[in-house]
Image 1 (cartoon, rainbow, N blue to C red):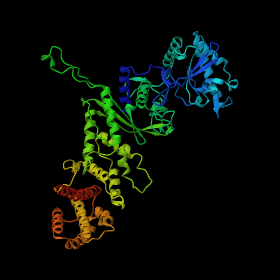
Image 2 (cartoon, helix red, strand yellow; image 1 turned 45 degrees about the horizontal axis):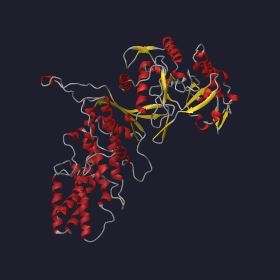
Image 3 (cartoon, rainbow, N blue to C red; image 1 turned 180 degrees about the horizontal axis):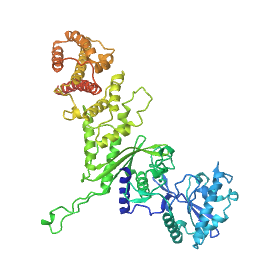
Length: 595
């Protein structure tokens, strides 16, 4: 699904004219080396442009670059080690490096053969440069010394001195020969032919796949999305990427599309250590309103949704999810297809954490439902996913949330599926085991933890017909929910009785009994009820009536205290406690406003 979607997007890029010509690679060239006709370096021009304080380098189209990590030269080389055979250490150049010597030797052999017979001035100058350049004699070259700090990371293009507008790789004679060589190589290829899983045709299979660059935390040289490096991965005599049967055509399409998307901030969002790629596919456009010709001579054009509209909206949606804002979903056509992939680096490979393809209307419905499920108390929308994950570890711990948790939760939000069961387990565990502090009474149970538990439960089938509400639901008769409400009432009763007598509690029953009451109500509540009777007898008449009535109403739905509560029931207990506790203070605020 991922490869086919990227190949479809590549077709859209072709329609827009955004795809490289076959046989070429685009690279940001930092320097332009100006050569005399004899092949000597006359100047090295820095091609950098400063915009908003950032230095950028325009890309140039060069003959297709090699993807091998071993010594392998390109036609019209751009890498300094191959071109000059020198390494730079502490501002000084050295020609005794073994890798540099092998690199320049490979460059000379490949390019002298290619440029033999070419007669254009710039081609002859480049060939002369290769023939006369001696690394051992050029360690003090003044042009290279001037760029010593940038040498190792710089890419180099070539031109004739005085004519920088016509670089070597754009020379008509050079391009014609390269395209002939490229076509001949493709025709002579003895690659395995098999049915491509993307296009469904019998095509040459790609043995190696191009690198993917732009993955947050990935290797600078790029990572592989499809690769087989171990003998254990071989099957039926097929080695390396022959196992996948992905054709050269599909490989070039998906890698080019993905690299394009990753390089464009409109199509990627970083969530923690994950890179999320999002894009819209072809749009079915209806140019005119149906039946409008009956009323008008020339039918008026209907508002059209373009791929750009959807891409901007999907991008904005992802960015708002990342910062915990509710997206606006302002694309008129809900039937436009979109794709969202979550990618993380894994050594030299790319791991796909999730991948979804659906219509924009489904995305809108899923995200809106997520915010609705999360809403609780006065909170009407969910916070950022990374903030939610922070609530799943102890505030006293230096440990980070599980690395895969953020991606799994985001996948659930986008796909409209329940959160993993471990999310509910972690949330309940934190509420049961954490304790509030004197200066912070919102550690144990805060809006985020309560909202997350509510979302986890409402996503389950058993709660979809009778979802948990944002605020206190007096009509909800689940025993676990009633137990949570009763615990909140007993805690408030204890606090009010102590304040009435002018005292102050060191700790409430929440600190002592919450965890056990949440898991084994029958073991704890009889004792708490007996203590409550003693507190109730000492209250003023008005408070005594209020609590007696409230406890009676809650008890009506409880035939007996449950012996044990399942994980989901413990979540209900917590929400019952949260709702009832908020109702106490909400009523108090309402009474203050009325006065």
